[in-house]
Structures are given as C-alpha cells and as structure tokens.
Image (cartoon, rainbow, N blue to C red; front, side, top):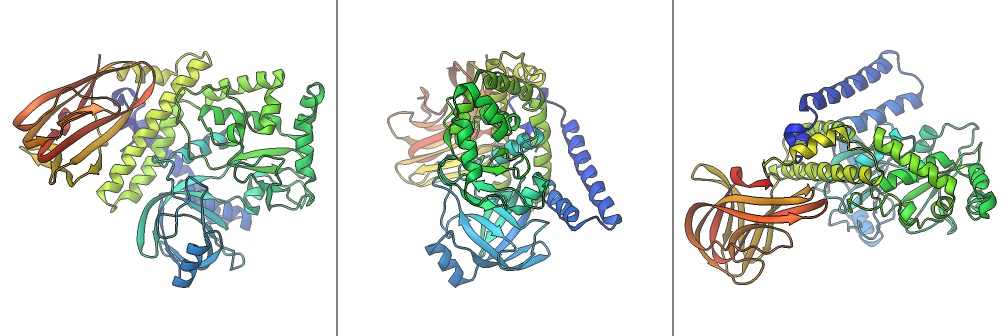
Length: 552
C-alpha cells in the first residue's frame, strides 16, 4: 500500500503508477551503478564500501538476528552503555564478536529485556570487520515516533539540501530469540562518516564532537572522532565568534562557521517542527570542524520527534547559543527567510514527500511478506499518519511564508472535501475483558467489540489530519445484548472523535442501523476517530465499508 492510498484524498494525489515508476527507476539506477562497479572490478576499497552502504539503505529492510551470551546480557542489564560481544546473522551473512550496547536518551531508553535501542560496532573487537561497508550502525526503537518515518523524511531533506547527516532506513530485529519487530536503521557518526561527507584537504580529518544531552558548544563536548586540536581550541573559536559584538559578529561567524549550511540546518529544523534539535533545544546534534577552513558544521541527529505542532512558527525562539546569536543579526535573518522559501518551493513539497514515501513503502512491502498481519497494519497506519501530518505541515509552512498553495496540495484540499472510508483501525483494549477483532458478520467485514466482564471499555482508533470545517462521522452498527455503563463520554456502543462526548448510546440488541456523529474544527488538526464499546456485557459490530468521514 502506497501512502497515496492512505491520504485524505486518494483520488487526487500524484499517480500511484508514477510513484512506482519513480521507485523502480531509483532501484534500476542503483542496480546499474553497483553492477558497473562490480564489472569493472570495482574501484578502491573505499568506493566499494560506499556502494555497499548505499545499497543497504536503498534496499529492502533486512532482519538482524542478534545473540548475546547470558553473562554479557547480564552485563548490559547492569551497565547498558558498556560494549559486549554479540553474534549477528543478517540473511546468509554471519558476524562474531560484534560490539553491542544499549542506547537512547530519557524518552527512548529501554532495558535489555524490553525493546532496547542498540548500537552495533562491527570492528570494536575485530579489526576492519564491516557490515555492508560500515563500521557502526544504530538500531533505533522509535518509541517516540510511531510512524517510524520521521528520521527517513528528515535525513533525505537534509542531505538533498547539502547538510551532511546519517543515512536512514529500516530493519527488523530478533534479540536472543525475541522478535522485537520494526526498527529504524541509521549509520553511525564515526571516522567513515567524516571521510564520506568531508573529503579531507589534508591527511588529518577534523574533529567530530557529540552534542550530548542538552549541551551547548560551551559545555565540553565529547570528541567522537578526528585528529584535530586536542585542547578544545576549535570549540572556543566558534564560541568567541558567536559571542562577538554585533558590529563584527557576522564577519567573525563567516570565518568560524559554514553559515550557509547552518542557516539551511536551522531552516529544516523549523520546517519539520524539530523542537528537540540544536536550534530550539541545544540537543541532538554533532559538530564537525573542517581541518582546512577551520569552519564548524552542525550535523542533525535524533530526528524522531517531528511534525508535532502542525502550525508551529517557522521563526521560533532559538535556544542554541550559536543559533540565537546568529539570528540576532538582520542580515542572517534575511538569508534565513530566503532559505526557508527556497526549501519550501524546491524540497519540502507534497510531490517530494509522495515520491519519497512511495519508494520507502515499496521497499518495506518486500520485507513485510511473511510478517504478521498486525505488522502490516501497523506500517500502513504509520505511513498514513506520516503522510497526513507532513502534508498538513507543508500547508501551514506555505501559509506562514506567504507562498501560494503547493500545486499538488491544491488538488489534495479539493479532494479532501469528498467522503472517504476510514481505514487503518488499531485495537485499543482499555479496561475489563474485551473482545477486539475483525470478523465477517452477515457477510459484512466488520470491527467486532465484545464485553466479557463488567466494566469493559474497548475501542478501535484511527486518525487523520483535517483542515478547518464541519464533518460527519458515520457508520452502520449492529448490537446484541449490550448492558451499558453510564457516564461520559458515552454509554454502550458508538462512534465519536477523541476529546468529545457522543449523544447516541446504542444498547440492547438491534439490527444494522446508521449512526452519525457531527463535529467542527477551526484549524488544521490531527483528529482521532473512535469506534467504542462501554458495557458490562454484550457485543457490537461496525461495518467497515460504512465507516465514513463526510466533509460538509
């Protein structure tokens, strides 16, 4: 299922055939590129590794089967950040003594026995051991991004705009026999990343610093890689430039910072509503110093909390020291605004998004073959949510910048006023002992909810990002023997949106009957739709073909 089938107006998005054609062309070009390299015997070891890495991120997700011996698993339970050896199998390739440790900050950290995020360092214990041309990889659990797509969207935006960042893909993970499901795959920030993104003008690559957790450039950043100054003088030079008096700050920053890339870096953080990046929160970044020019380059990292506030301003309050001091200068503010408009017109568009998600989805469909139905449903739901929220953000950005509507967005908005059948329903047991499944009832494919014990509350939910207006949610519902609970947001069986009470209360037993829930919204918002049962006993069926959203 491509994202264009999941959006608010499937009939009016770019052709699915066009998206598939673009995706096939992308893979064909990649295959030809790799094949030519192989036929020529390949090129330098570095070129071979680069091709292998590119093929990894451009290909379908693979399954990492990771085995950690009991004593080392205990070590990770006690000291999650310490490297221990592990055995890893990916398809027919096996690796031993791969360094592995748990990763993640406050919001994403999980224990070894839960669903941990992992760092894999293939040459930690075995010199020159690599996987698909890479020394280090991260497997992120994406607990703060249920779509599993924010990293993918942002990574491509940055790289196409000329800001180096880690490539992103997907993988499935099995850890000591447990199927942990889908993960976000990212390349590591190490010496290989430096050489690929910053070809050295000398034999000594510059310093790459880890921004740490809520640390600014004046807080002794940890050196990740590089052979630059060991006394922190590169960091001090950047701080002095940013702290210079206004009269000479622009000139000082131009000497100490790649200003064009930095403004692009900030602009993409604003476009994607990245509240947890360097610009707004002094977090999730790397900092590289070019050994020839001495200029600093900010690199984005940890881009899993994007598009949360659809209408957040593109001119936010900057908290990062360098960002704040740079944006105090009128000439930099002017350049920043111009960069926002350039990116909004050239990169951050509905056509670009549809093309990107189409390629990602096509790769994922190959990997989903043989997975459980809930895995496929979870992916489809995340794809739809990522599509709808990003498109709503594109609409908001263009409005804030005074730009005409995106041409594809014009079609989308027109199409979104047509009735649509809602899909992507996810089961949500809340309390009691519910039954939640999809069945055929009277030859109608239906969502089925039942109450086995008193005090049962259960629902199916899906969401869409909607533009302002009046809407009706409707469904055909059948009930049997429902003894309803009293109280808000509604008794018995019914339909509604999150945060609202319903007036209809379906109880007892009745044959299929139409039910409606009307509501109005005043701004672009993500709306969660709810099919629910609140009862002490009984059951209800909701005909999936009639669960429709009707704009007025």
